[in-house]
Amino acid sequence: MHVIIDLCVVPLGVGVSVSEHVAACQKEIQASGLEHRMHAYGTNIEGPWDEVMAVVKRCHEVVHGMGAPRITTTLKLGTRIDRDQSMDDKVSSVERRLAD
Figure (tube, one colour):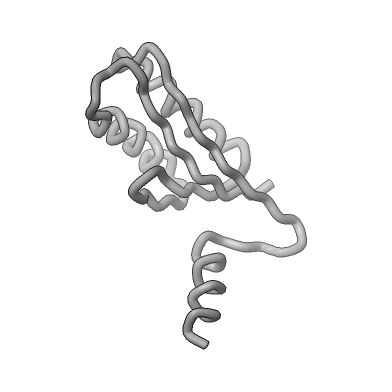
């Protein structure tokens, strides 16, 4: 099953700045080969369900491995079976309506 997620991983107990931890998670996402787009408060990722969830797990493993005692993650996800739809399709649909 194809899934599109919005992932926000926040390490707790590591101080105010978390950019080092976010960068480590982002490297795992990039290494996965999945389509993704980082934004100011997370990353959109799309692909097969098991591969996407595996990279979420890997982010947690890496961030804990960096010494974060706790992680809070916000995950929004969507699936559809009536047709294929990518992140680009979703954005383009809204952009077309804005252009009208």
